[in-house]
Length: 347
Ligand SMILES: Nc1nc2c(ncn2[C@@H]2O[C@H](COP(=O)(O)OP(=O)(O)OP(=O)(O)O)[C@@H](O)[C@H]2O)c(=O)[nH]1
Ligand SMILES: [Mg+2]
Image (cartoon, rainbow, N blue to C red):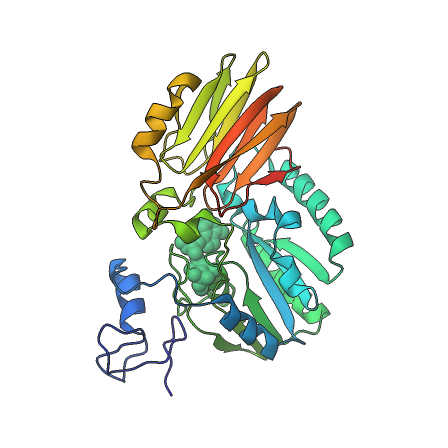
């Protein structure tokens, strides 16, 4: 049985439109990986191919090995309230904090370190199975060295790379092993099966990304996903207000802010997209025009209300985050299914 080197799927010649298709069994990459890598073509891309049940079954096979959990920095900010670490409670975990380069430039390395130290200190009390944590891309060379040092300290020879879809697992293995054979792409659900890679006396196992029901990207069509995904350094969009205002991220998210006196709000989203502001009383008109326009299947947007006394950071996974300063009431209109995380992080 031959498998695709990029995504791990079994290769087949029978079904042209099916997953794993190759015109010739000599080929190492399936049609989907080939077209994705060379033409950025997503015609054969199905984001809902892998289920969490299937991925958890892969993990079960490696229960005694080291699990390297790769986490997007914005997900780290709400990790304490998320479901991810619960899935690894009984496993030895090394956390790799990825994509720190997307944080705004004004957040210094010192500040990032302080924020992460605090988060990890709290997490470790709840999850003593987290053995270590490293940032992946602040000091790249040092990261590779540190990573292998930890593996040797932990006497880990077989390592399972895991995490939410699109966290950067396959790219990271490629980078660590100075290769490019694993398919990495901007779309979630790229890796389809486990892939074993032997390197010196190690075995690295790449796995498909877990589907996160609390992430907007799970519900967006590919086009909108591409436009809203944060892949570059965020430039915050900051607004001051003294009257009630409504802020819109297309039809995806609406935040109404009713300040007691003065307030400010900063949005951290893909900087190609601009937050639209209207007076609160005109908010409904704009909303009706853009309501749910990009969401795969129409899903009701729910409203959640909060009272802010001083300041609060909110994480909307897959879209970004926003921070409100000043005493105010806010109403967040967002996908019902997606949890809004309130984070203690002070950025
Ligand atoms: N900005 C930034 N982007 C990154 C980083 N690491 C990976 N990416 C991007 O994240 C996207 C996902 O990368 P993959 O390696 O395919 O992620 P994955 O976790 O293997 O994804 P699945 O197989 O779908 O679960 C790609 O667009 C990468 O270029 C990083 O450190 N910073
Ligand atoms: Mg992958």
